Every structure is written in structure tokens, then in C-alpha cells.
Length: 197
Image (cartoon, rainbow, N blue to C red; front, top):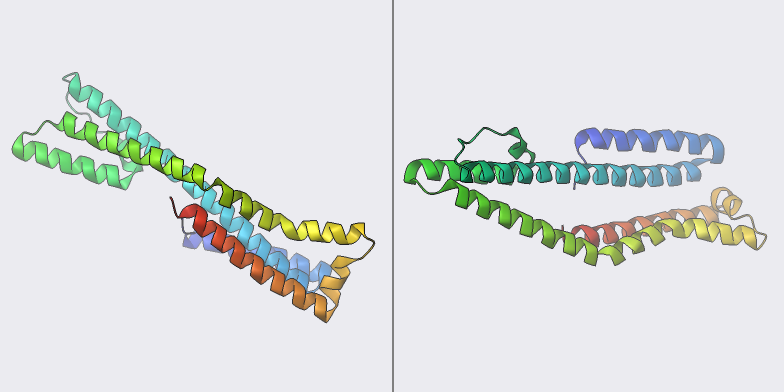
């Protein structure tokens, strides 16, 4: 899911704040690394929050559609329901069913039930595809944690990897190259995971 313009401002604001702290505490390389990781983390957090919001809206729309079908089958007049607005596709299809039922007298309950069945089957297929993509998600987590493991390993053998990465030209070049490679790997993993969605 793309990050909205308001989300972009949040990502840039967080990255800018972390960059300022990194600049004050560790210099320009720390500022760059901190800004990149803060931006990546904030963007991912916002994407996950957006996906949860969309899923909740879709679930509410499907529940509203199920209730509408039950009311129609019971012979009750259709009550307007705002919960169908949680998913634009379901709302459009429901509107098309009402127009078709008004023009031709087609049984709206049967058509609405088919829309609900199809939407729930699509949700099950998407959940199955997400489960299949779990390996790529684990890879992304490992990619994100790998630099910390390397720094910890450096300290465990008696070196000072943070000083080398932030204060020497060769270390700064390695740190920047590592961040670029990691961004590419995370982007690739994200595409693998979001492809089935």
C-alpha cells in the first residue's frame, strides 16, 4: 500500500529528526544512516497501519452485506447501511445490484449473496498467499537486523566498529554502501511480500 502525502510528511519528519540527532551525536554518516532507517521504519509502520484499516473496513462492509442479505431473505425492507462504504468495490457492486433489481426485478438477495461469497473467497485466497509469503517476510526481518549483528560481532572480538564506520573514510563508504544494498534488499522483499496482496 502506498504512503499518502500526510504519511510522507510523517516519514520525512521522523527521518529529519533522527538525522539531526545522528548529526549531533555521531556526525554526517550517522545522520544519513539514522535518517534512512527511521524513514524505512516509519514508512513500514504506516503501511501496516493502513493495511489494518483497509482490512477492518472490508470486514465491516462484508458484515453489513451479510446482514443486508439476511434482512432481504427475511422479507424486511432494505435498510441503508453505511458499513458498505468500508470497501469501494463492494459498495459499487451493491449499487449495481440495486439498479439491476429495480430495472429488471432480479432477486437482489441472491446477487448480493454471490457478491459476498466472491469477496470472502478472495479474502481467503489473499490470506493464503500472505501465508505463503511468510518466508520473504522473515528474510526482510533478518535483513533489517543483520547490521546490528555485525556491529555486535565486531565488539565481541574487541574492535570498535561504530568508530570505524562513522569516523574513517573507508568505514563511511562501507556504511553507505551497506545502507544502499540493504534498502534494495528490503524493497525487493517488500515487493515479494506485497505481490500476492
